[in-house]
Length: 199
Ligand SMILES: C[S@@+](CC[C@H](N)C(=O)[O-])C[C@H]1O[C@@H](n2cnc3c(N)ncnc32)[C@H](O)[C@@H]1O
Image 1 (cartoon, rainbow, N blue to C red):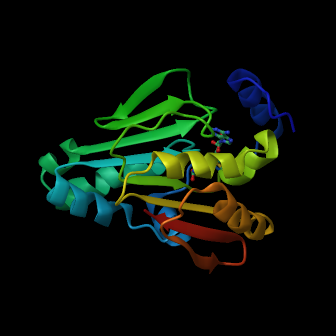
Image 2 (image 1 turned 90 degrees about the vertical axis):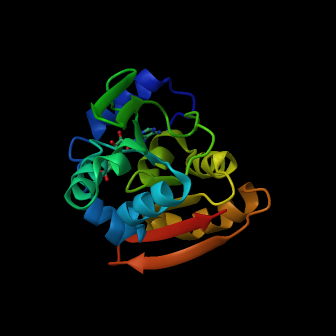
C-alpha cells in the first residue's frame, strides 16, 4: 500500500491487480446491502425540497443510477427526473466528467478527497471502501470527509467487509467531530457490514 499514489498510479495499480472486481451492482443490490431506499428518497426529496443530490463513491459503472432513472421513468413524470442530480465518483472512470444520462454524471476522482457540493442529500458507497483501504489506507479519512461535507438532514450509507467493520466503527467515532447519529444498521449475508449515518 502506498498512501501517496497519484490518481493515475492508483488507477493503474487497481486495474492491474483487481481484474475480477464487480463494478455493476444494481440499485436493488444497493437497497439490499446498504438498506438505502434511493428511489424512495429521490421521490421524497424532490417532492419536499425540489431536488435530490446523490453522490455515489466508488461507483463503478454506476448501474444503480441507471436503474434509478429507469425506475422513476416507470412511475413518475419527467419533472422528478429533471430534479435529480446523481454523481458517481470512481478512480477507474475516464478522466473528467461524463454525463451518461440526463442528470447522471460519472467523474474520475479519488473518493478520499473528491469535492462534494453543498446541499448533498445522500452519499453512498457500496463495496468500495475495502479497496480504498487496501490501496490508500484512507478509508476512515474518506468517511470523515463525506461526513464533514454532509448538511444537516443528509445521509451516508456504506458497507465494508466484516474484517473492517470493528475498526471502522471505532475510527468513525474517533474521526468525526460531533457525530450526530452514527448507527450500525445490519450484518448482511455474512459478508458485508452496512453503516448508515444520518446528520
Ligand atoms: C467492487 S467495485 C464496486 C462498484 C460499484 N459501487 C458497484 O456497486 O457496482 C469498487 C470500485 O471502487 C473503485 N475505487 C476503489 N478505490 C477508489 C478510490 N480511492 N477512489 C475512487 N474509486 C475507488 C474501483 O475503481 C471500483 O470501481
